[in-house]
Structures are given as structure tokens and as C-alpha cells.
Amino acid sequence: MATSRELSISTSFNYELPIEHQLPLIAAAGFTHVSFGGNAAHAGYLTPTGRERLGSLLQKHGLRLDTIHGPRADQAESRDALAAVIEAAAALGAPVVVAHPGPFDFPAEELPARFDAVLRTCGGLTPTLRRAGVVLALENVLPGPATDLVRLALPRLDPRWFGFCYDSAHDQIGGPRPFDLLAELGERVRAVHLSDRVRDFVDHVPPGDGFIEWPALCAALSASSFAGPLLFEVMMTHSAEHDSVRFLRLAYERGCLVYDQIMTRRS
Image 1 (cartoon, rainbow, N blue to C red):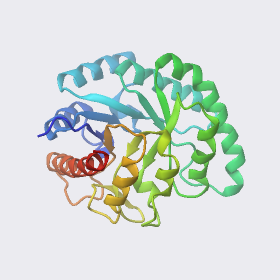
Image 2 (tube, one colour; image 1 turned 90 degrees about the vertical axis):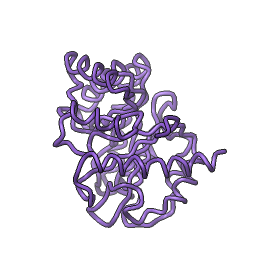
Image 3 (cartoon, rainbow, N blue to C red; image 1 turned 180 degrees about the vertical axis):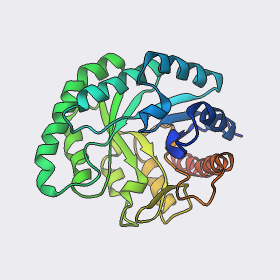
Image 4 (cartoon, helix red, strand yellow; image 1 turned 45 degrees about the vertical axis):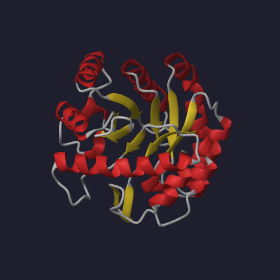
């Protein structure tokens, strides 16, 4: 398998599989990187002992950690919770922590208050991010007010420490739709969560298993400032493939196709 492609997969692909069993399978499938999903207990990175164990496992299997998915950014406890994830990311060599700015969906009248809450959290985290050398990437969620929160917040935040995580399955809820969000925030993209969408409540499947127009997405991503690695946040939940080894092989093969489309457009 080609080693020049930098491809990552989230541990959320199958949380029933312990992390020490996941990592060798991810490496064997061809991935160069891994991302710890939002289930912090599954990876166990919040304790010094857990970080030491994970560092040894990553080194053993030749994997690098590209991102950690942290908690959302608009709650009273968000600053402390995200600070702990940022410190773990720095210890394990991950350059980016991803966070939803708020709930997956909320009514428009809540937008001003949630906007203020996100700015407070991010302002409080700036010294931690600077000290750690880590970027916090805010992720788009449901199109509408919940994603408008990202659009509003990013222009107010220092691009050295705050960026955008583009989630394709979230962006295409109710789609197919144009990739305007990716074009709009392309200069702030610091992480991606790539997956396909079949229909409502059936998503995060490998590219090609849903309705997303991948050539158009790859064109938009190739025009952005994002340099990689490409993270595939795909899950076995709605996949026809229920064997972890075969699922990871499928995800890697589809990931290679996406990677090559992007690189071809950039060359």
C-alpha cells in the first residue's frame, strides 16, 4: 500500500473494540494516523497513565495522532474540559482538538447567548492553546443556527489558535447541497471529518455509500488551505460491512480514492 498518503480514521468507527485492539488493525489497513473520537473513556487519554500507555501503543504500531474530538464549547464547564483535552493532545503530539461549538441543533433565538458563551470559552483557552501549540477547530453541525455559530465565531478568533473542522456528513443534511460552507471557510480549515450520508439518521458511512458528490467535495477541499491528513469519521453502525478488519480495509481503499482526487486537482 502507498505510504505517501496521509490518511486517518476515528476510533469512533467501532467503540465496542478496545483501543489496544483498534490500533494494530488501523495500522494494518494502511492508515498513517488515527483520531480519538468523542468517547474519552474509550481511549483513556485524560490521565497521565493513560497517555503513557497510548503513546507506547501509537509508537508500537507506527501511528500518529492527528486530532482528538473534545466536548462542546458553550457550556459552563467547557473551558476546563477542553483544556484537559488540549493538554492531552500536546502530550501525545496531536496538533488539533475538535469541538462542536454548541448543541447539534438549537433555535435561532438562542444564537446570541451561545455565541457569547463560545467566545468566553475560547478566550479563556487561548493561553492554554498557545502554551500547548495546539489549535482548537470548531466543527459544523446541523445547517442553520448551530452551524452559523461557527461562521460567527471564527472571524472573532485568532487564526493561529482557532480553526474550522469541516464535517461532510453534517454539511449535507437535507442535501445534496452545494459545498458553500467549505468554500466560505476554506482558509480556516484545520481538520476534516469526511464521510458519506445516505439519508436522515443514516450517515458517517464510507465515501461512495451515500449521495454526497465526492468530485465536487474534493474540488472544494483542494481549493482550501487544508494540508491534511484526511480524517475519515466513518462508522460501522450503518455499514453493510460488520467485520472490523474488512470495514477498515474498505474505509482505507475509499479514502485513497478521495485523497487521489484531491491531490490530482492540486498538481
